[in-house]
Amino acid sequence: MSANVECQSSQAGSNAACLNSSRRLPSLQSLLATLVALDFEHESDIETIRNSSVDDWLRQITIRKLQERYHERRAPYVRQLAVLQKRLQAVAS
Image (cartoon, rainbow, N blue to C red; front, side, top):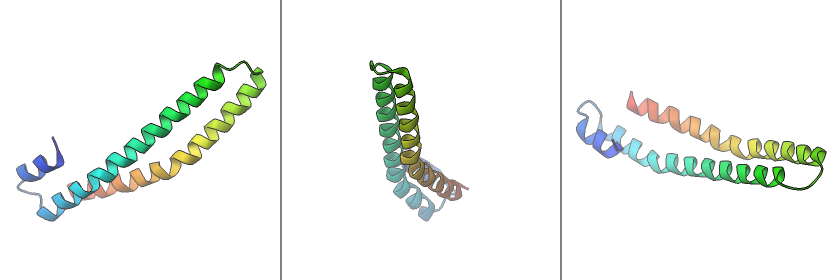
């Protein structure tokens, strides 16, 4: 059920809460799309390294560095998502 339908069908919710929720939905979608893109890029990079013909020790080092970079790049978006989730839960309650 979309946020607009929930707002229209909910008699307990206020118009302000519905407006806040619908404004945050694009932010949520954007954050999720960014995380999916980062995940896809990371998996693709890992697969490329695994299929390469370099020595195993170099593959392991490269994969470790890619994983560190991946976690560093992903962390701010995960934090933003957690903040947005708390805000949406506050609006819903």
